Picture (cartoon, rainbow, N blue to C red):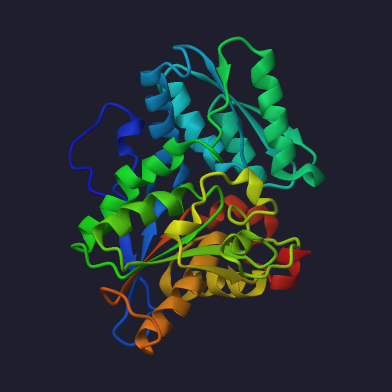
Length: 326
């Protein structure tokens, strides 16, 4: 869990070492543990890749000292990169589709980053194209590109996954992780399978996302309200490796919303829709293990709660489902 017993010299030193908390939604003797990434200074798991990617890119000369990073992002990655960029002497520009959280965009600007919006209908593909165009036009600019940069997954292989395994003394039977860029899932999955090849790995996506097609599942592409996970075009998610994944669990907006409301009321977790989806999928896995339908090395499920609900209050995340989705 988070333990900062000595003063540190930079906010970057407070990233990671987040709490791992047992949830009440286990089944039988199967426990579910969630890593609370809102405890990072930028309040999300993306702080990890912000620090890790930029430090490695500076070390390798991928971006020059004093240069500029231009990144397409739904928000949390922008906040994580903005925190790291300023502390590492870099400028930051973020390209964000209009529909995403206003709170996130305000925080990126507060961290001295420039925010450029692209039309909602262009999706992340449009944001990616615009970011690359800007980087080409500017001197000493580079796109870290979280959707394809192996450093994204490497950050979680080196930090998030070992923290989970240390906290649970290596007793992890299944990992259930929301899949957006796929970096978090891939980093944790690779580490988990090195510890025990029988570990069950589940990707979580919203209903309407098409990650499941990569494992041969039928999917009907549609819009969804859950933010931060899922994809409408797997070609843009270059990090996803089907060989590391046993199942892709699709969760409806309704189920995710019901669960995020329950998590707040019953367990005190102020988390967003991606965490609601992860909790729903984790319960499914726990029930399969408890019923004897799934054989795993340990009766423990580990998942990730990526950020806080406070980023989505303006979107009515705690209102009725109908109000939230309207």
